Amino acid sequence: MTQPAAVTFIETDLEQITQATGRVAVIITPDGKMDAAARRVNRLTKGALKRLIESDSWADMKSAQVKTLAWPVGMEAEALDVVCLPRSASSEEARKAGVALGKLKSDAACLILAGQVRRAMDLVLGLRLRSYAFSAHKTAKQKENAAITAMVADPQEVQDDATAQDAICEGVFMTRDLVSEPANHLTTTEFANRIAAMEDLGLKITILEEDELQKLGMNLLLSVGYGSASPSKVAVMEWNGGTKDEAPLALVGKGVVFDTGGISLKPAAGMEEMTMDMGGAGVVTGVMHTLARRNARANVVGLVGLVENMPSDRATRPGDVVTSMKGDTVEIINTDAEGRLVLADVLWYAQKTYKPSGVINLATLTGAIIIGLGHEKAGVFSNNDKLCNTFLRAADNEGEGAWRMPLDQVYDDMLKSRIADMKNVGGRAAGSITAGQFLQRYVEDDMPWIHLDIAGVASVSSDTPYAPKGASGWGVMALNRLVADQYEAD
Image (cartoon, rainbow, N blue to C red; front, side):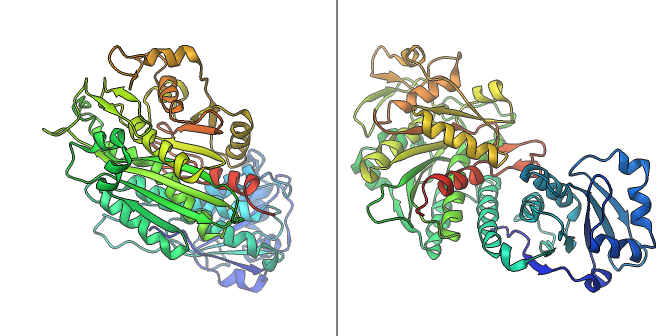
């Protein structure tokens, strides 16, 4: 797994600033006020910092922006990054400032003079998340992500937050790595092996193989993988950090390690991007890593359906009728609408096996959600206002865009089939909503449930707030926050 940059929090040491190599970041308020560390930097640079602050260039600076002085005189550092940030900066502002530093960091060590910043942890989080790079398959030797040192007023005070931040960054990076991996490396078997390795964190791992899935009647999930040589699997990750009798929250992820569309073959252009169609499973895996790593005081179970959707002589055909684990029948109109088939059986298994207090599923499910919401927000579908609003708050607090979409009987009626209980698609119109309606048929009536369609946010072609282009890790922080705020024991 790609490792986040290590962080050390120390007390402010003015003498150490002179010898610091790599990059040094100094925090200046918009009105130009300097703390003791900034004043030391100003003396070392023979007034260069003060001249910058008094310039028209600084007057045009906005909160969280950075100006860089290269090879500052009087210092060993290769760069002095001057960060414009109010003392009372919001969490979002502090993270944005960290992201700005992360874009500059590359492989250089970084010293942050954060003594006067009330949200130093958020600034460091933004920096760490943005400095991610996936280089597992590059032959050139990659340099390690150099360490970050943050000078703060009281290092001991931030120690607990620092441990939790390590867990969050690792979970996000794990998700990004999984989503970034090419399909010939991240097969269903390899994905399951990586999950199994998480037993070292204290998770209970169960891998259900094809013979067990057949006995359970998970025919919808199995039908997706018929055309592939890779075996279909369901991986279960149990974290029991809460009270013994507490019903767990269930997280369910779509893990299609590659999606050709099956017999309903996708166009060739852009098909290489379908390595990210396991994004929902990637998020669930990253969240479970984070919860275990920070020893969350909650019971959470993560379940992911791992399949590959390929065309072959064994592949499911359009027009086939398949019986789900629940017992109803589905007419497969389009084999490229496979994610909902995977989720349907895993959703039913999760409820029947673990009797959860609520269920949240994640999937790169529809292109239609991208048409509706672009790459800025995930689509949120829910049968429970309380759970949905709680999640939306958590996502907003973590800067991960999400927007609630409708569910209604009129959309459900679009799934009627002439020869089976339902079709797996409802036509072109309202495609993301009819997909949600399909999944809701596999949610028990009294079960609080959220469906997150993350097709537009899991992997994108431009920078996201916390990541370079590519895999974003969207959802790990929001779901971790949801668990921390709503499910952890006092």
